[in-house]
Length: 216
Image (cartoon, rainbow, N blue to C red; front, side):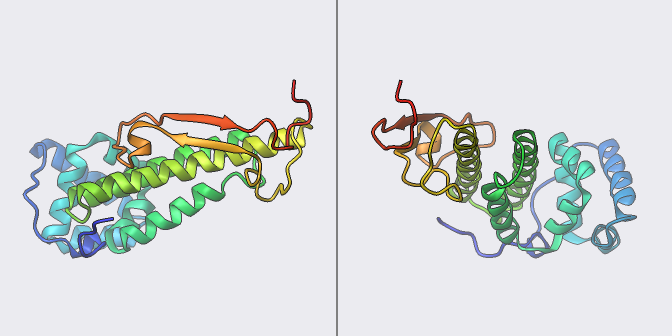
């Protein structure tokens, strides 16, 4: 992965990013003041001025998706202001990979949707701020997809085991030694996912792996 040095929004240099309009700028500032009541780091941003404030305000005026995410998760914006974006992303990817354990399908789906939104928010801000280059953006998006796919298959395999359809060698690692292969195609396989990419996979399995109770 080619990395641009530095991973904190707080360390950005001035960027040629301008707000969509003065009306949107005032609206975003109103939102930031509201969020600052619960998030001290957002309050600090408002009072500090400088390139970080200019960047955040402009980015939120230009992207309704980023603004909606910040409105839903002001703590995520607060974390992005000072914490290392790569560290935050590593933790979210670990959360995605582990979310299959001990939860229902509905809970897993909700967790993966939430993590997708959080990671997209962080990646997009780092992208716009110039902290990530294009190769790193697509690498992070690919890693999020891989963790989500792996968690989904672990859940499905364990559910089949618990339902008596499969006999897993190690239910704690449901896909291990099962003869299952999940192959990423297209941009996923090339590690070139972008923000709007579909995830294309092909699934193979070995019918002689010994995990299928009824081969028919």
